[in-house]
Image (cartoon, rainbow, N blue to C red; front, top):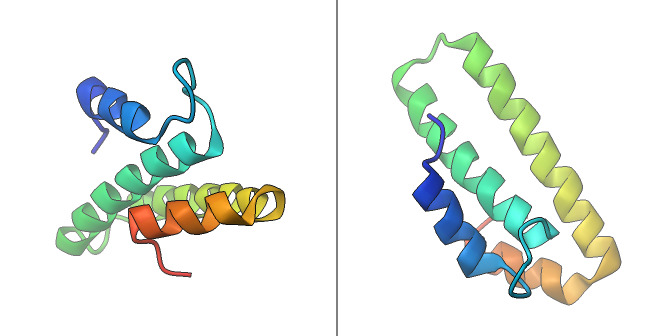
Length: 89
């Protein structure tokens, strides 16, 4: 369920804005999207895992808040990240 350290480092390298950036909204959204996709896949096979469903809903709402913040601060970056991650909105 959890993403590996190598995958997380790869995501940070792909979405970071600067050389030492690890916490920008883009990086956080990319990591959350990977976790959301993993949990969604898990729930397709385990439909009655309600604890997992609750965790998924919390991750989706956290990602939504980050996307709303990014949309308010810089709409161009917001559009770029939703296209790169193929998030529908």
